[in-house]
Image (cartoon, rainbow, N blue to C red; front, top):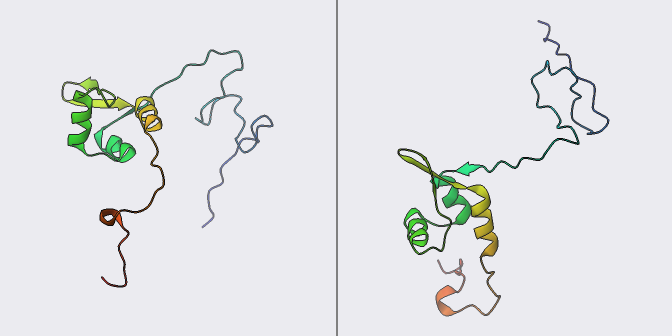
Length: 115
């Protein structure tokens, strides 16, 4: 059986690797004209993704929100909330980095030879 052939648009010389789109018939996103205004869209993320991005648990996130130390959630519906991805990214960027230092006995790496 012969495999179906698909027509492909010619590569766009302005954006190598992306197909050119002149008539929009293939359904790919169109390139924005250079003079078009830039509109930034903020992505909303739900709690599991916020936990993954922040490394915090549900209770800690809500406790920090109550203490004004974590971005507030945005109501998405009657029973749904989400967080702006940009707020979570800014919070992550504001977190201080740990300074390297000597390991304390409580935080010493586990010796796998004796376990």
